[in-house]
Length: 306
Image: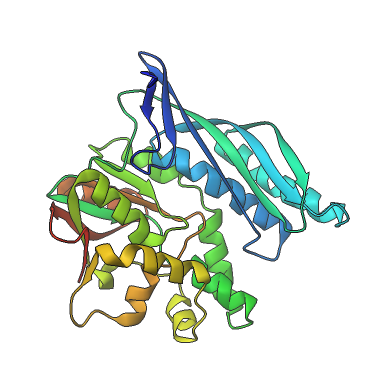
């Protein structure tokens, strides 16, 4: 039997679920964890926290509590484990989110993340299913964390490019979420493992519209194009392309390497927001963000790339 208090479940592939508690309060709930993406354990923990918090911000919610999820080799260095936990805790403190506990299991592969609970007004949460024709598409962080992490593993990345990618992943989407609360936001999602086109596809299909993306307007991290040129392409990017490409139309002459990066799996990526064009311009004046395209009436393909 359906629960009438569930305002948003998994049907539209949104970033989190929303459960109504009262006429003016609802819970936002999400869970995410993954293997290390950087070498430093403290930084890895902090990125894992930022990534998990992002789903609540994408829904327009305020994170309040978190539970950690940890897989760690039984005989590994406990100092490394301590650093992971401290990094995550520090980022939760920055977000004003209380850590209530968690659960761990022995595993040969390190995995870490959080289940995060937030609060939102039941009539004001942001979902990906309400994009409207005429809206502008706004992206709040540059792409490229996946290919830069792969380049790092292969010894191909410049230290300064890794540092900038790391800082991007460590940056909470809190400021973007707070800024967008002042506008008439129609659709919102965060860009993580499925890449820009994977998450944009979910938004387009859920909203019964088509998203037009100008590839030259999409911001990229320094070193991202060089990583693609060096074939430092993660398996996730290839999987994303295979999954999303049937719903993608690319115009003739689109830059191949830039187009490839639209499939790049992101960790703690930015928000993809749809809102009226005038509001989009004002939002981009308030926070680091870029207009990358527009929403149009539904075409044969969910995504058109120019």
